[in-house]
Amino acid sequence: MALPKQLKDKLRFPVIAAPMFLVSGPELVTACCLNGIGGTFPALNQRTSEGYAEWLLQISASLEGKEHSPFGINLIVHKTNPRLEADLKITVEHKVPFVITSLGAVSEVVDAVHSYGGLVFHDVTNMRHSEKAIQAGVDGLILVSAGAGGHAGTLHPFAFIKEIKNAFDTCVIQSGAISTGEQVLAARAAGADLAYIGTRFIATKESMADPEYKNMLVSARAEDIVYTPKVSGIPANFLRQSLESNGISLDEIDNPDIDLGKELIDDAKAWKTIWSAGHGAGNINDIPTVAALCDSMKKEYNDQLQALK
Ligand SMILES: Cc1cc2nc3c(=O)[nH]c(=O)nc-3n(C[C@H](O)[C@H](O)[C@H](O)COP(=O)(O)O)c2cc1C
Image 1 (cartoon, protein in one colour):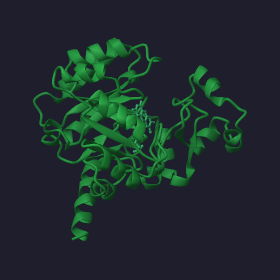
Image 2: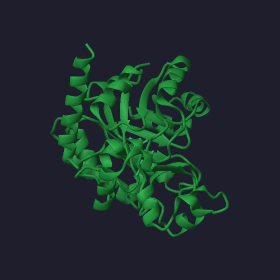
Image 3: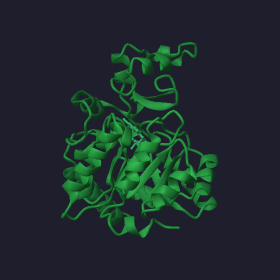
């Protein structure tokens, strides 16, 4: 199954800007959609379900009457998310074009989104979760591979894409360490229908990230990214400089006796002041507008395509 037509026909470049906690908001989503790529945000980026609904109205109003790509939202499908039911109801009421589900793939959520013609893509890091998602009826899998920002997987994308494609006839969206147009092309060449890009969009004018976070990304290299479960309970990638500026040394991270996770989640420091990024950070050298970034990615993609001929 290839990329569903309602998405394929409306994307002018094969990219979705990934949802990022505390980073993606209406300004970023709108800019992405107006520049031909999919824009997304996590429903939880608004503190309440009412606020989430307001953002949906705001985004729809900004896009109305203009040529634009579809937008999507991210739902955390997990028993610890008390907002799931209310946010899903709002998603259905507003007919959000596509939904990205994380942590759990359940047919009730998929059916609810399908009821109005929406699409569901599910984040996966391994074959077992991919099988479950396919059984739940999702429209595609987002392969969160090694080096991705946020809760990254550990599999190499070359290996993972092919294994998934051999096992399932589904749309494949590749996530992890993609920052440039050449890398979008590489994901396509490896068999993905779309590239899914997070970290690169943190360092854009329209992202909600702290200016210091954006500057830290510009100066970071891939080797500055630390993969640890200690901050959020699930293994995720964080900027070493940000761990250190929060008083967390790499020695502490390596020490299995220290439970930073609980402490940091309890005082809400995780993600707010401890900044996540993927290995693609080393390929970020500026903080452009989304329009300028999309233009340069399209040029890199086309130049590389020509160079390969
Ligand atoms: C700061 C940050 C926050 C993130 N928050 C979420 C989130 O709330 N929900 C989600 O599904 N993925 C989240 N992700 C993962 C991204 O959606 C995406 O899979 C990842 O950023 C892709 O890898 P890349 O950053 O190397 O491009 C987050 C990633 C980052 C960097």
